[in-house]
Image (cartoon, rainbow, N blue to C red; front, side, top):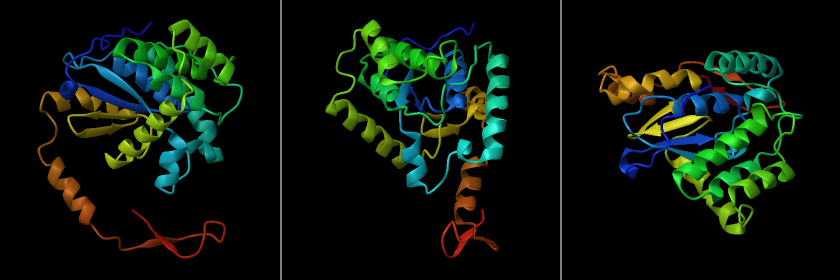
Length: 236
């Protein structure tokens, strides 16, 4: 069982924002790993976003929409979950509609309740209760257990959309993504970089490298298929 350390609220400037969508099995694993990490007393804030919205904004596709990746993701997620000591199962369908689960988490006030809600809906998506799946009915039961009654209100829906806008403005392009002290860490495999970053042990040239990369021009392109649309796409 994963030990969850980071559930005590601290000052907002020291917090950690976890952008997630329950549709991602990697977000499920990352959530539990992050809660078990030594973050120097910083609280983790679960920030639900609609992954499909990020994909649409960045004109991309989800990894599960590529058949070869879809099979790989199922296996790799199971490996990562086992490595983390988490139960893992597949949902009844995928992609599924994550909106009820995301709205429930957004409707929760306070770090503890928000953390509990995120953990429960992740369990419905990929954990021991994945056979039940994420649906309006299963989320309604979780909401009742938590005493949350306005989780499907227009206000909550607007707040969820605002989360997506905020994520895009901060440079988020996928889930899971962790934002801490202005730095983004994307994916399960980036989490182990967070403690060294907090200790000031990042490679000293990272900022300069990022600036150079942003201004590096392409010297080749790939051609789009007819199905993708007309014209070449830069290949970074």
